Image (cartoon, rainbow, N blue to C red; front, side):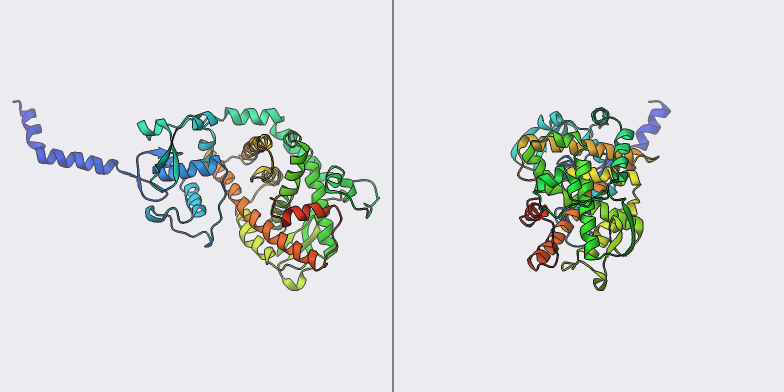
Amino acid sequence: MSSEDAVLSTSVSPSDHGTVINHKKRKAQLYCAVCGDVALGKHYGVNACNGCKGFFRRSIWKNRTYACRFGGSCPIEKEQRNTCRSCRLTVCLRVGMNPRAVQSETGDELNNSVSIPAFLSDDGEEEVVNTIDVDCQTEDLLFDNSSRSSDIKSYRNLEDFIQNLRDIFARTDDTREFPSNVSYPFKVAFYNPHLVSQRTKINPTGERPATIKDVLNDFNRCFVLFSDILNSLPDFHQLNEEDRMTVAKSRFAAFYWWLCTNWTVKAGCNGVCYSNGTYHSANKSEQGFPDNTGVTQKSLETLAAPLKMLNLSQEEIMVGAVFVIFADYVPFINSSSLRILNQARDKYIALLSETGTNGRTEAEVALRIASISLLVSSITDLTFLSTDNIEVSDILHIVEFAGWTTELRRHRFDRKF
């Protein structure tokens, strides 16, 4: 035995050898960045357990939105990670899980996975087990954005799309004729928005508290804007006529809340900012339209505050207004229309991502888009509360609504959105 062999044989005894192996095993142990459970590798950019990986994939792929009942501060740990899905998704995004990595997985990849109905993942949720996951959990993710790019090019290009939106937002009517008091069906009003309101200059400065007349004028002006934008989108015209009207009735409120709350952030007023230089004050003594549900104050807390942190550009606000139209599920439409809406949602997510690049890394853009997507649940909550306000005012005849709004209000009262 050489002196070198002797040194090696004496420096590593059998017991020491076991210690070295165990030390390596301990060093190689990975933990989920979301809940702290054991992780077998990286998923969507971070170390994650199967449970959190599957939860994140389902949430992003199916565009799910959640709401926390406890102010968004729930602890996410292995033993209680299912307690609050909203906070769990927030933690997933905070630690760096990349939504675009999920979106880059094709439908075929997900559909070809091995589905075992009786199998439940370790977090108690029904899981679809991909054959790749069985062999190796640390597979590399390929970020293939070619399908996203083709979507954008098929619409035209981002610059043309944004310019089209700028033109619509800036459009004004030369005529001095005011809409008549004739009662029109919703469909007639939607396709002939000049019957609802003149296209006055949009002026969201929030200079003074709004009167009831200001509130109604803004409602009409924003509906005209909604009609102009929706009718300019090729995706919308791929739907059959009945489903078009369902989408228009279902998504106007979300569009309206998105714009008004972004205007609130820019104007810095204490209330919901309108397009005509006024705002609906959070101070009840200054409210022209009775707020029985406290929706004004809630909009400042749950929507305006996070939007202020995002500090969206004007382009992001405009593209985001289109995105929120398609961001949530629309009930009572056929499967063909649902497929069109899902494709449109993906396309406008891609356009919104491109709009928000502006020197940011891909991970920063992905987190920004995910943060915007999470606001959809807040918008839905505000829609319910404002619908209750309108219903009370309607019953008590506090406000005289135009005839064309009857179908729209009934659609909202029946919760068909």
